[in-house]
Amino acid sequence: MDRSGPVAQLRSAVAAFAATQLRSAGPWAVALSGGADSLALTAVAAMLRPTTALIVDHGLQDGSEQVAATARDTALRLGCVDAQVLRVEVGTAGGPEAAARTARYRALDRGRDGMPVLLGHTVDDQAETVLLGLGRGSGARSIAGMRPLDDPWCRPLLGQRRATTVAACAELGLTPWHDPHNTDPRFTRVRLRTEVLPLLEEVLGGGVAAALARTATALREDTEALDALADTHATDGDTLDVSALAVLPSAVRRRVIRVWLLGHGACDLNDGQLRAVEALITRWRGQGGVAVPDEVPAERLFVARRDGLLTLYREPVG
Image (cartoon, rainbow, N blue to C red):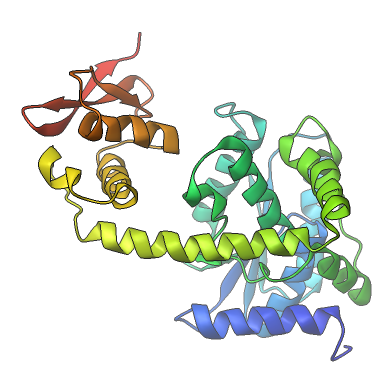
């Protein structure tokens, strides 16, 4: 192995991540799709610790079973102690990309057997995530992108470019699988990757992906600091005191509201919904309840202001 080549670079990145981010020195799992990012990650992970490859077969394309079987065989040749194919059924909630992601993470969580799971996200993936957050107006939490460690999910390659994983596969003599969905313009992330980011690189003179990733890191640090401050005001009670919330800075107040709502069954909250709930405190004019997404599909969750308190109630859908 070239000690200065892409394989050595990725191995060093994964080893540094393990040394600084993981408490245990035990075995780990890698989410392996067969693409260059996850294939290169599997190769270097197996050099460092006992590694189990988890291959999710979404069943969305003809021949997906063969692709998964090939990935499994490759993982074992690379030195993985085990390689499992996890077959899933993809729903429709949130669109095809979101539904596939939900099914994938659930399968990985079931298959990991308590191990941390390494994911092959790179600088390029982080840049795409930041652009998606910007375009959707989802607030700082979304623009802050993916965390390097979001237990049990580990992203040791967030400082590496996609080109490095491709070069590492070439150095190892590996042939990555090219998912047709990764070039299908029906998917928003594909158009960001193939159209928007190249245009930004051209217009701004290069370095855009890395700059977006740095922006994500800075915003994540700020977000985590504000979250810690909000935690000092958080409560798991059924109500929130409006007068206590009114004196807080807006950024802290919305975080207290967010934690409270999530603790009572809300899900998939966005910035607009949190601001609408905040208006019950800061722009109170006797308005009715604010609907927020509920993890119970058959019910709708509402936040209302009553007698100086924010309270929750549910109504059946339909």
